[in-house]
Amino acid sequence: MATKIVKKGKGIKLQEVAANKLTKVKVGLGWEVRKGGQLDLDASVFMLGKDKKLPSDEYFVFYNNLQSPDGMVRHKGDNRTGDGIGDDEEILLNLPYISPMVHELRFVVSIYDAQARRHNFGNLEEAYIRMIDLETGGEILHYDLDAEFSDDTEVEFAKLVRDGDGWQFVPTELGTKIGLQGYVDRFIPEL
Image (cartoon, rainbow, N blue to C red; front, side, top):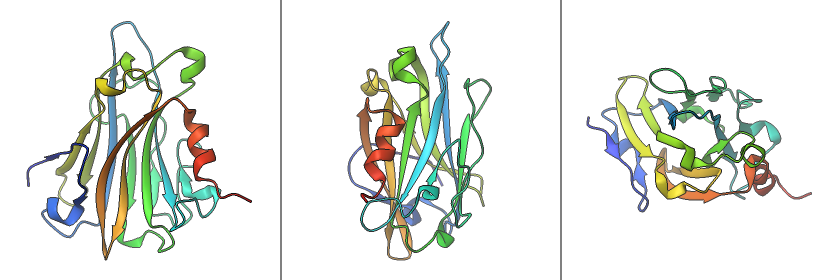
């Protein structure tokens, strides 16, 4: 099946873009830095309940918490340079077995220590997020983190929302300058 290039707007049911019943997927983040630069992008997943909040801190999967409590969302580790061919950071999802208390997965790409280092997405070339069907190895979705976010330090690029017995991919394209901690503060339940 051909890759679906994603643009902001209507969501896409994952079953409509996959050649088979989609279960295990990889979300890959890749980037190149403009000549002479160095920059560290980080992929994160916020696993949210019906209230759009984290059920607990452990449902925030990122470079310092590599696995969700149910083990169905797993970050493969931090790449600090973007060097090399292919995806620089990877998050693995086992969609049918994600805890039923999770109704939404929010994917955020942030620049490490962006404010102090004066980095933003304008320092990047060819930054992208893509989704791979691990059973077939085929790319099913591709999303470019383009120049639209050149002044931003984080981008919430998409969310996966439970849709019956499957998931719907919804591009959100929200650029911010609040830092990764700003997202944590947004999704932590109020006491």
